[in-house]
Structures are given as C-alpha cells and as structure tokens.
Image (tube, rainbow, N blue to C red; front, side, top):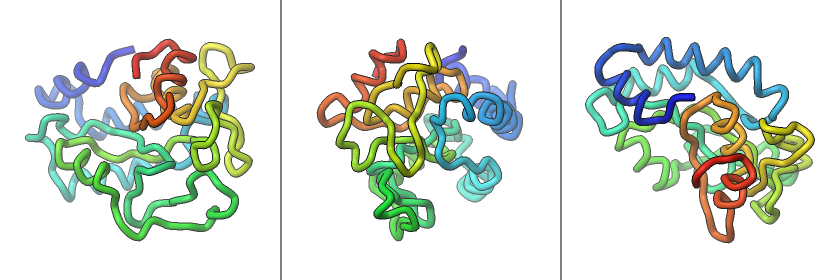
Length: 181
C-alpha cells in the first residue's frame, strides 16, 4: 500500500492521472467495501467534477481523493446523518470549515466514511449503516468513532481519510487497525 505523499507526487509529476486514481479507488471500493462497510457514500464522478471545477493540481495535495467522516465534516448538498436514524434524510446546507480548508490545500472530497451514531461509541456500529469491519479480521471492529476512516485506509482503498479526535476517535481506530492517527 502506498501512502498519501506517494500519490501526491505521482499526481504532481503526472505519472498517474486523477481519473486513473479515482478508477482504481472505485474498483477497490466495489471489491472491499461490501466486506468492511467503511464507506457509507461514494461517488467518484462527483469527485472528478469537483476537481475539474476547482483545478487543484497546483495545491499542496494536488487533488488527492479524501473521504470525509460522516460526523462533523459536512459538505453542502451531501448527506449529514451523524450516523443516526433520526437524521437519515438530512442533507448538509453548508460546508464545514474543516472541509473548506481541506479543499483549499488540494484534498478532494470523495464520499463519506462510517461512524457510530453521534460519535458516542468507540466502535463503529450505527444502526443506520451497519457495523464497519476491521480489514485485518472481519469479525472485529476497526474501533470508533473514526472506524470507517480507519477501515478504508487499512484495507488499502485510499491512502488517507478524514477523521477527528475528541476522546480517542482516531487514536482508537488507528490502534485497532495498524495505523497511525
């Protein structure tokens, strides 16, 4: 598995195109996500359209695809459920400052990752989306609350993903999944 900096360099040196990278990620999502349930939304065409609109090639991260956590990383027009049945039909009306800044430095939002309802648990098993699975052992959780993010990175679907931490929300999933977070 190659890390995010490797892919940024490949994009900047035009050794791989964004479209090629997105297609590779999409194939991995189709193959692996049914097992790990890390992504709860995914749309590579929207990501490519966002890139074409913003032309992030000359930024720090050169348009590197970047999944957002379903909790606290809202993008206007995207689902905003906080992992809860209560908000299953909610859509973000604004884009969070975190996402705006991520886009400014060239991270390209690409879908949303699974998180426990309101982030209240250290395992990712919301009733709305079902449990995320640890790619190292599908019988185990990748932790929480950034469990979906940890699962998609540890499985090799993407090199990096959005996460957050208030009480171990990425430290726990990172430690459960063999990552640093």
